[in-house]
Length: 475
Image (cartoon, rainbow, N blue to C red; front, side, top):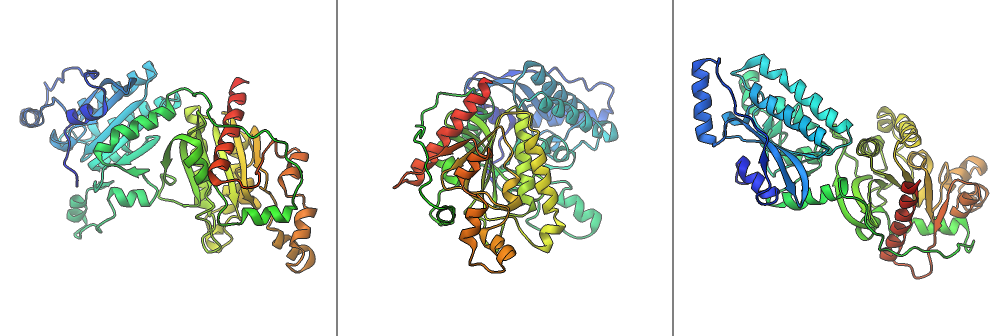
């Protein structure tokens, strides 16, 4: 466990020096029980703050932001009526001023001394945050040790990007309360930041010292405007120089570059997200905020390196993709989808996980996005799992990419009763990029010249995507 930082230390760590301006009004505790008032005075003396929450406005690398910071030393960071009103007022003011909200928690939950009246204020905080998100404004949160109860079950679980400090206890019910109520200890290792990240409930575990860099990178993607393109487009005309079956073999090579290479060499900044936020995580899908050749966007991409015959892309991966679609719509960012899959999972577990329904929902979301969309046939494009990410304003294909309802071997088995006619079926079904361009499915093809390298391929693909996003924005 890292050393617990006080609220003011966190503000000093993340905000530009001298930029913080408090939005907090003096707290009026008159009318409360005298014993409780004494507790509040002692808490204020111990914490050096007048409540468990500080709010205000500051600059983060020159960008205006609103901040909401829990102070654990004030009655274990618990949220009473005064603290809840502060949070709600700060979020609403940030929405009115059109600036992001950066929040950090360290709390045992709602304040027991104030009971239900304090508890129901979690609804007001939640409503304010959802109005902020509906305005297309970013909300980022850093969960510190501990974050439990009503805080985690309201404003602690509603951010666009959720990160936590290493070793932090994070959970709905505190383990001590659970043990007293249930008569047995809570299983170890469940309510930890690392476990929640592994389960796809939060996005990352980050040391406090790493916060400024991560927040700066996130805001550069969510707030800063597009920048000038720097990567070179490939403008050569693509001719039919190899068979569809040859292209299929090329895309199946373990050396074939994928979405990871495009992000590594083609993105100026990237922040990866993890999971569905609902306890599911499938490594077959990458979801990220990125800046592809200067253009901020949300990326959803099928990761060729993590899909195998024994671990294909399952329904959770498609739910992760829909998280990316939702974020793109909400934050008014373009969506870029990368298709590179040998096919979705075929298993009893996938059927019970609604694989067909998830494909349908992805197609429906992709077909009705409210922001500019680009889909990229990067390599293999097999079956419904590929079709799920295809609909877009502009479809780009790598020269050797392909799209088919089944692997050619599967089509051969259906039509001929054997696997020997796979190459013939690939030609007959017109699965290749040039055929897809001829029938209008694909709009632009990125050439793959002899001697191409993963870096050069990725940079060229990023340049094409960036150019298409510029064109879509100009419309």
